[in-house]
Length: 160
Image (tube, rainbow, N blue to C red; front, side, top):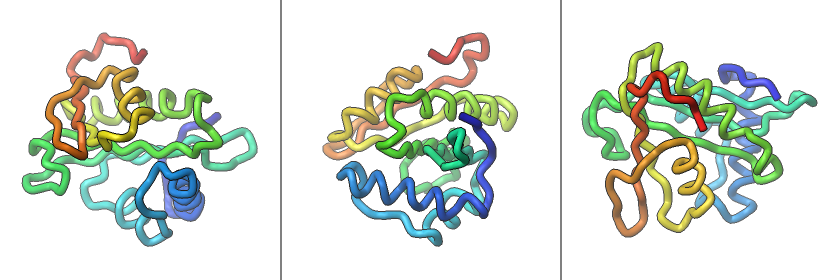
């Protein structure tokens, strides 16, 4: 597996990953190319968006890190990072999320960002478990969303 920054040429394959997640019932909407470009690759607050590429060149998943501006749609505090992780169900349990997170933490340190927030659906046990395993801890909850925070400032800490 190879981790690299996402670019427009990866857009359709990233859209296919979102469609795979939707087809598995793990996402509310499919992801078309325009959505991928606008929300991940070309987003004005993008810090990093990395893709995990399999040995065959196929995109297995991707992870986005954005800068949280005041009034962002996720309610993350201004100045934090906002993370989104999307791994194809066909690539689950292969270490894709862990490898992507290593690249994301490096980007957060370089930016620099001290905290990253993830907003996970309360009925998404796999997503909640993933972020917990990466070192995120619950910060706030609603009926539908659990927000977890990761403290990047612990620069000496190893990613689990």
